[in-house]
Image (tube, rainbow, N blue to C red):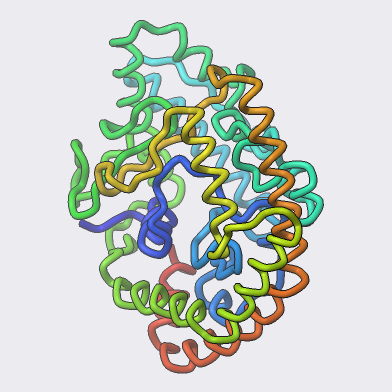
Length: 355
């Protein structure tokens, strides 16, 4: 199956980081604003190879995340085309100007430096209700109000018309790799409903410009191997041991791997929300974050206190003994990787530039 350019960020994320569960986006804070590593020059602004989150892709635009006027104009056209398509399907849809969508509830928090973010939000796992964090996720969204007024059967029809047969109504579209989902349009493209059709109208739907995720499968595999190579470097191993000792001195013992504190917080939150972090779900399914509305308030407050305490200690210890050794090894390894894979990386960069 070929995946259109609208879905390539999701494909890259699944290929590089195995993402697709309800865990909060990483890294927290303004870490993505740091200088580009050698590999990020080819993989794009969304590429991160950080000491706290491993290799992953995150979705944010250039321009410090702010869209250009040209991009905003195209987004307005997509909204207008979506509204027209939904009207033809028999549903009401309000075209929301993109400038009203840009600032999410926690945008200011995400722009904080990592240390300040940790002091206020920890890792942003239990301290932020991600189900309410996105733009348009609150009751001010006119289309949410329209949908909520429908009967259960009408909601399903509305969701299918808006986002295709693989949508669940919560902004989640489940696509199993290797198939085109439950409903497909011509040329083997996944049916993404009126939103997908509108995007094709505005950005173009030339199937020759679709990106086949298998085309760069070998490159993604090599990048994953690169991450393991960096982690196993003796300098990083020694830095990790020093970080563990530093955390123990700060009253947080037992953490041996750099992601252990974050994962422990996530596991505690999963226990409170009744959410499973195991990867045993359907392959390729992207699930939304759980709401905290029904979580025990006292236990959630206790978890948030623990998260902030361990995140601050984690941040301090990384700054003291881990970040610099890791970055030195990372940049050395990535530079060598770029030299060995330059043609593949240039091909990926060029294809993404034309998406």
